[in-house]
View (cartoon, rainbow, N blue to C red):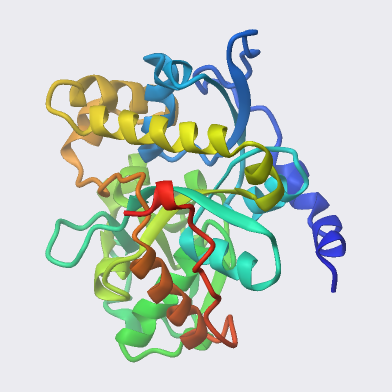
Length: 326
């Protein structure tokens, strides 16, 4: 099947990825004559704060960019948007980017965003059930409904890896997709049996949920959680803008992780993702990085083969531009 036909088949995902979301700082501001406009998908995760920080503090502008944020449901929808030229950069996860690459989509991975917290660090993610649930371990999830934000996305893949590590065949559970903000509440209300949710997105349901474990740390151990891809065509025509975008993210991430700016960064994140800044500040954070760990990304291709999602790991030798490599 040719790439053009695959892109046409993703039209519905593109429509879902390009609706307006109020409250995102600077999401629809027009670019000035002096700046180059770029459109970037956003899911609205609290840890996308580096985007809002870059807008609020003029970091993108200092690098000659005017960033417009375009909401997206998940990584696959974001790739659909960038392939249809609805956006310039797609916020997606390492697994989705590798699957897309293996399917022949001409993509470039121009920047990382953050990695999962490595084993031994405080829990950042969790597979959550209610406090009074009879489910006590991964084995008890057989035939149960597990919520994830996107079928075939990183959270389902990692949860499958975790289930395998716990001795459970992922085919024996029922994955269901719900928008990320609804997952914790759906568990609390009994609509689903469990859900894979970042701690910072539990919201008001946190007091009635408990975790069966961190599927990232207890499953694959460490993954390149998220980053940004663009098309080969756009990259060839705008390599300077791609490098400027990477440099902007690196500068923004360095600032928000500094002691000087961390409090303000949590305030900004809370304002954009509807959380309490004090709660956000008290939670473990995924390590931010704009530089791509190519070896780690390659290992994720092998995980996709293990999960039966790819026949062979894709060749990533030309996938990550030199300026973006760690």
